[in-house]
Length: 183
Image 1 (cartoon, rainbow, N blue to C red):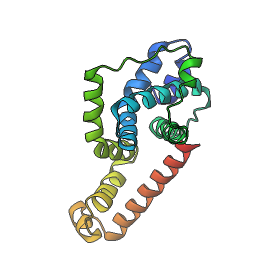
Image 2 (image 1 turned 90 degrees about the vertical axis):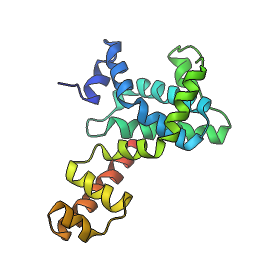
Image 3 (image 1 turned 60 degrees about the horizontal axis):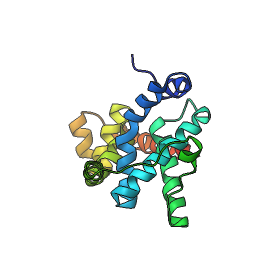
Image 4 (image 1 turned 180 degrees about the vertical axis):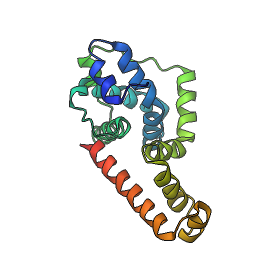
């Protein structure tokens, strides 16, 4: 059975592979999110590295009820906005952890560019992934596909009121998860 984000972060002190697993689990969503904000592969790489360095440094403050993905995206958002204010990406967390400077290869740049091109879908999929299937489908169909409630209800073989409730609950969960991630 896969470990939860909380379990991975709790083990990171004594088992570096636990943080690697956490990183691998969320890297694509963080790259897509940051890339959609900054539109520059090299800056994206810097912000992603700083985001995970800050997450590693703050791993003891991760709350069980929060989504690891939302938590990371909140950190990334703060790193991006701070870098815009200062005109550069802060590297404090990486310095504190004694991480060496990143060498950005052409393949890394191409990989980030591909992720940025797919960013809208990846970010949306990342946010929706934490919802129960019924809510995820209802939100996807109503908000993204802009289907009418009655069409969704007919396709899902339920009442329009049920679809409205699923969309409402799904959106409320997304707002709450995002707010928790930004704290």
